[in-house]
View 1: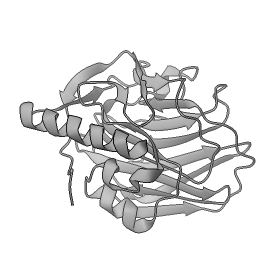
View 2: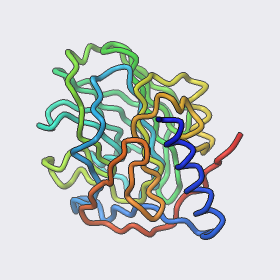
View 3: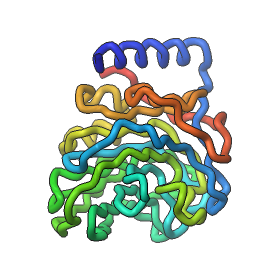
Length: 238
């Protein structure tokens, strides 16, 4: 079933590339305004192993702005990737205890990057920016929950609105596997998430003129923002 979905997604994106040279992504600006896309009917994850990736471009990076998140329905347990005010990329993992750590690479506004976070277990996780600048954490984040809320642009729609990203987003993906350094490096070169551990993909929302989560099988709900900004270049084949 997943293979069939992947083939349909590849065909759909190919037709978009052929017919529409200038693709469209999701613009969540301005920051702090509560603009994001989400699904409360996402395929649930029971926690680690799990990985996330999203293409993002900030207009202005501020403390707390979120690119992609997966949380439980209450919003109290979550995974979050955060471009921070110090121009570094953070990964926040909370099951019953907050664990926050940071990569070593820095980013600049008005430039597309790929943010990646992985968790192999409750005591083993990593964060990357463009597949490099790896940061790690072995802190214990506690007992896993079931995560069924999938968000791009903000961590949780019950959260404070200042956690919205001020910028553009595309190619949001979640895997029920912990990606390796080599796989993170492939994503960092702007290869499509469809080409990395495809059998483990649970969510894939490219945000190309549609809010469809092609792998999760749901359409994301838009809360503000604009679907139609310039989409980053994505490599669709090795």
